[in-house]
Image (spheres, rainbow, N blue to C red):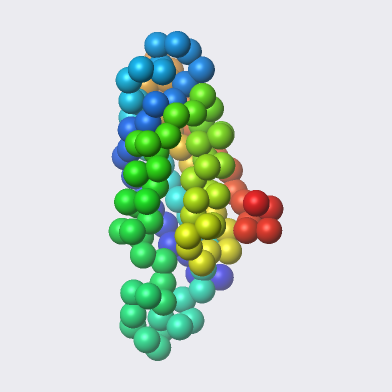
Length: 118
């Protein structure tokens, strides 16, 4: 199994359970690990035969900036569903960090789903 990684994707989103979080976008840092198959690209050397990490990062950033969630977990689920609907990947793992959620620590969530689980 082959993998594509996108690390430290910085986005902003309206996210949080508290009232003060519902008005101003907050910074989030997203890591993605996507299982795929590079076999065709080994021979073709064509971008159309792989996961285009530039396109994926733009899709994820746009989704986050236009969304409103209370929970990081719900945002992660939305991103995974979006990726499975637009990309040919087998499995996605995602970590979302919320730097301003805690004082003196980094709050984050991590989840992994296969296409069949969604």
